[in-house]
Length: 331
Ligand code: TRP
Image 1 (cartoon, rainbow, N blue to C red):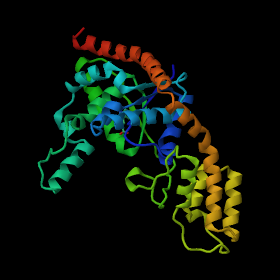
Image 2 (image 1 turned 180 degrees about the vertical axis):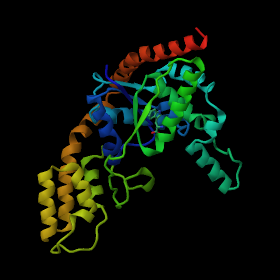
Image 3 (image 1 turned 45 degrees about the horizontal axis):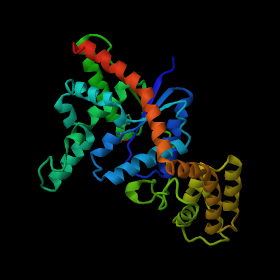
Image 4 (image 1 turned 90 degrees about the vertical axis):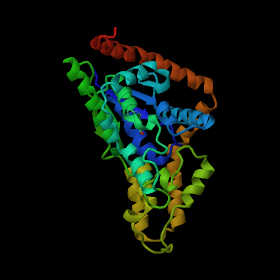
């Protein structure tokens, strides 16, 4: 039997090229080797997103974005967290095995407390119980589906360790392997994507290229990439050029070698390098952009895909809860 991988996607922002190379592509590649499950963590997003129209739009946008990027709902399981009531049943049970002290140590909560202290406010100002218990809900997401492996960025490793701790205390208490212990797979070698200003592409730096920007907008953004003042005739160093670093993500090895040679020989200005970059970026992103537009234009079809995913997911979830309830004497 294949091992299970599980990816949780928090629908809090629009997808950009950094997400595409850093998270989406590597996560979709897992479907070749694993029994892969992907879900939209909409209840996690609720902790910070209180505007219903905004949250609803993000959920649809992110779901459509993953489908457009190649997630095949026939081959993997793709669902919304909120469609699986067992997530919340398991969360309640796991709460009984989670010490409050463990939650006190969670990075996100600690950071909020420290910021409050720095501002001289009450330590828990602006902290809701959803934020405080975030790691328990996340542990439930993972444990519910007997996940062997969870691909995450470094910032999420502590959450996986907490899920392990919680699952272990359940198993220790009942002296049997009731719950599967998940492992984190940290994305160390995922591509770092430079943003428009040369820093890492990140929503918080405001330097992102949206994944599904219309063609004209995409071109306009790429033309805005910051360059140095070298003139057209001067030879240029591809390895220190943001344009070239981005180019490498989209171009074939032959194309990369050819453009690097043009950099080094001089005679090519930054404007031309940007045009060449636009050509390869648009070549890769035009097909998913079209798919994205088509999916967003048909909300009922998107709902059907997610509902079918929930239907596949629920029996797995129910089996885990049943096992746990039986072990716990609540059956
Ligand atoms: N906390 C994750 C993030 O912020 C999202 C998430 C929620 C998740 N539940 C999960 C990731 C379960 C992996 C497994 O990105």
